[in-house]
Image (cartoon, rainbow, N blue to C red; front, side, top):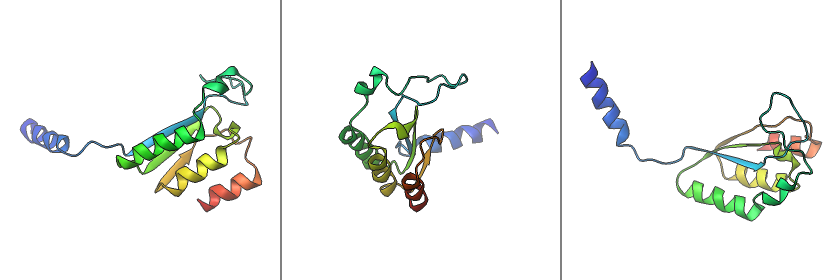
Length: 119
């Protein structure tokens, strides 16, 4: 039994290593101040200037995609706080087989709702 398990594990170790799923946090800021949340940075925080620009996010995404990453999770703080959220979302979802968004939902507009349904 142990010998068989060892050989099965060795087979798995021979598979190529590549990222299967990526996670992008466009911002750590959030418009809520939930007591249970470990990430409670207000929307107007100076942390905003430390966030990656859309071009930088696109570069990270493209590099991960070249390595095989096809599924993405968009999270953060509240990703919809970003003025360029729709651009980020559209770019990621148009180049992925699946995605998920972690959001508090308070900033969903009809336009964002339509885009998420279409993607």
